[in-house]
Amino acid sequence: RLSKEEVLAMEERMRAAMRAEQGGAVKRAVGREFLCLVAEEEETGVLMGSATISLSVPDAMFPAPIPTSKEPKAYVSNMVVDNNHRRQGVASRLLGQCERVSRLWSYSQLWLHVDLLNDAAKDLYTARGFELVRQDPWWFGIPQRNVMKKTLTSDK
Image 1 (cartoon, rainbow, N blue to C red):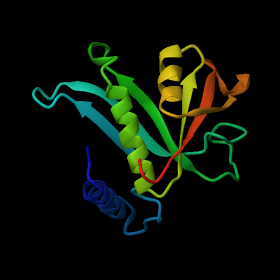
Image 2: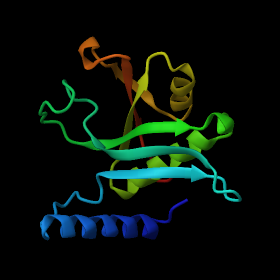
Image 3: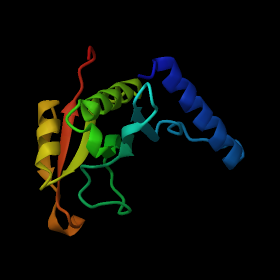
Image 4: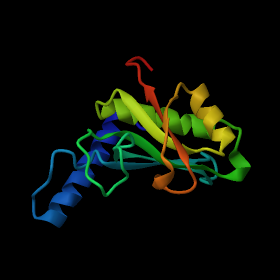
């Protein structure tokens, strides 16, 4: 579990690296665009799972790179748990950390996509308080996915 100070320190290191790459020109959002969270066993360091939280526009009418006027949102992607560690709460803990980071970034919602045929993931997200927003249109690609969001409370 990352403390607020650790997350802010990581963001500052990311901003410094971006400044070095861009000659000092850094947008306000740099450092709050992407974070990969990793779950590993404490004793062995074995990787159990990971998730990415980033800024995205999952409710846009058309997928990127088509421009949209909608605002970016905190977005979970690439959630994966190793087969040997499934059904042990790893995904729930990763989602909890994604929610925490979203709040630290001052977002009040967390968004994600889930494949229509992934019943286990849909059940997990629903149990964690995510609600269906819409099913992506067929032209977004295969597999078709549902867009889900969770409104975050300030105390959790």
